Amino acid sequence: MFQQVIHETPKGTIYIEGPCPGSYLADLTMNSKLTNFRPPEKQKKALIAITGMPHGMIYIARHEKEIVGYITFHRPDESSRWIKHPRVLELGGIEISSDWRRCKIAENILKAGFSNPVMEDYIVITMEMCWHWDTRNTKLDIWAYQKVLCNLFGSVGMKRTATDDPDILEHPANVLMARIGQNVAVSDVALFESMRFQNRYGNAVNLL
Image 1 (tube, helix red, strand yellow):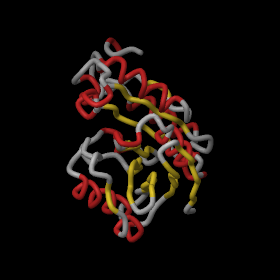
Image 2 (cartoon, rainbow, N blue to C red):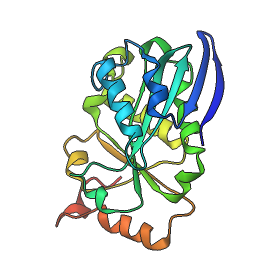
Image 3 (cartoon, rainbow, N blue to C red):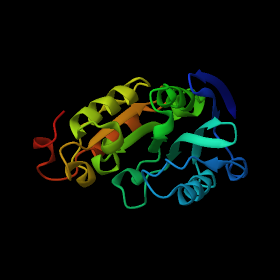
Image 4 (tube, rainbow, N blue to C red):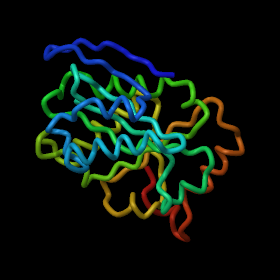
C-alpha cells in the first residue's frame, strides 16, 4: 500500500513516501550527507536490497529527485536472538540528511511508516547503538542524543525495553525500544518477554 504525504518545510516541499519498491529508489539520487552507515551510493544499494527481502520496507523523504531521509524495516539479522521470534520486525535504520535537519522530517517519516496497518501485526523493535549516532553534526553528547531518539521513537508508541542482549549491553547509552501491535497474539507477546533476558544474571542488569 504505497502512500505519499506532502510535507512543506522552509527549505522546500518534501514527499514522504513508502513502502517504496526497489525500482522506484533506483531512479532517485541520494543526498551526499547521508553517510551515517556507509557512503550514499552504497547505502542506496542497501536500501534497494531491503525492498527485496521478505517483510522488507523502505520509507523515504524525497525532495524533487533526491532522497534526503529514510527509514528501514526488515526482519532481524540472522545472528540476532530476535530472528527466532516470528512476529518481530526491526526498524533497522533512520537517517535524515544534515541539510534537512530541524524540518520535522524524522517525525513525519516515522508517522508514515507506522500508519501502515501491517505494523499492527508485529512487535517492532529498534536497536539503537550509540556508535551510529551523528553527535558531531548535531553537537549533542550521547546522552542528549539518546534522549532525542527515545522521544522521537516514543512519538509512534515505541517504549524503552530492558534486555540483556549483548549488543545493547556493549555500551550504557545503547537502548532497545519496542512497540507491540494491536493484533499481536498474547502468546507472541509472552514469547517476546521470555526472550528479553537469556543470560543467567540478565535480570540484574540494564533495568530501565
